[in-house]
Image: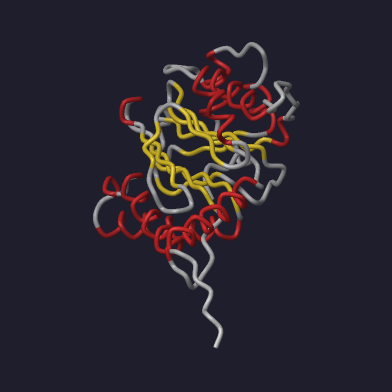
Length: 254
């Protein structure tokens, strides 16, 4: 009679964590930064249909790195949770903290289950407040833990290197063009110290803008609007025009 192969619980969990981290690292990085009027999401994404960033509810945005089919299922579940809670109670009862708790429970259950593989995803849930002090950013790794972030956060790919770059350069009160250019510079930085060029048509950019008059604060920025914000000199009038415009080609949500 052969002896069953034994793996300690500690080793099994470490192996599952390593598996998930490797899967997430294979994807492209994305960053989420606070700026003076809200929160900006920036990532390298050549696809026009498979989004990394999405609107969850009025003031709440969602960002994800890793396997698309897995984080898309989580995004849909978050939208359903937010819609049901807002309809049952009040729209103000839908918060990023509550949504992060729901995601944490789901990811934690899947990670600890021996019957299925862990999700290869890392999430960011952000909520824009009435002032910068009310902004909330939560990072959720593959194991379901919750990390309360401030200022900037990077996930996926070489997130550690990008986070270090942002920590050294990000500051409170940045304008949208300044935050956007910093995000692109961070994504372009290489481990050897050189930079690569990321054209505007390979970027996915969205904002949660507290100054918008609409109840929904999420807006995608792309095409000529994005190119204008990436120019070396951007006036306040240009910034306000880009963010406030609501053309049919620049859809706000999903």
